Image 1 (cartoon, rainbow, N blue to C red):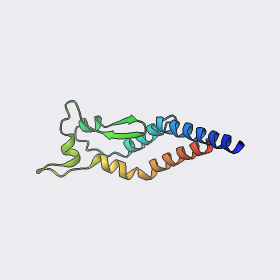
Image 2: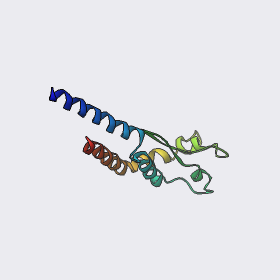
Image 3: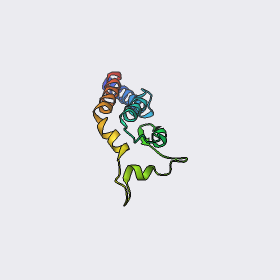
Image 4: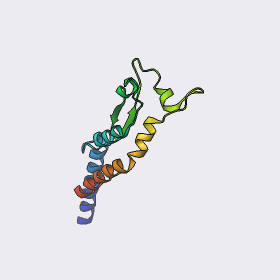
Amino acid sequence: MPIDTNADELADRTRSAADELERGGLGVADRIGATMLAAARPPRRTGAYAGTLRVTLTPPAVSLEAGGGPVDYANIVEFGSRFVTGRHVLMSAVETSRPEWLTVAGDAVQVVLDKI
């Protein structure tokens, strides 16, 4: 019987730790978002586009977004048009910051594993 009790306790602790990670209880999403935002290199002619860069956190997802308000050309900056080559600001930020945010995520997973 003790084996079942230990297994149930382990399962409960594992679920609890995973829920905490998914809810963003460790601040992982905030740190990943800040890392991605810091890596963004938007065009700075007027600064309007750069001013619309933002991180949207809906743990466990982290999104890097741009545009809105008077900046209705964010899609053109990112993806281009038949007249303009896309700059891929957002995707470049995600890709260049990948080693840093993977480290942040890995550290959070280790914290969860240590709690089990």
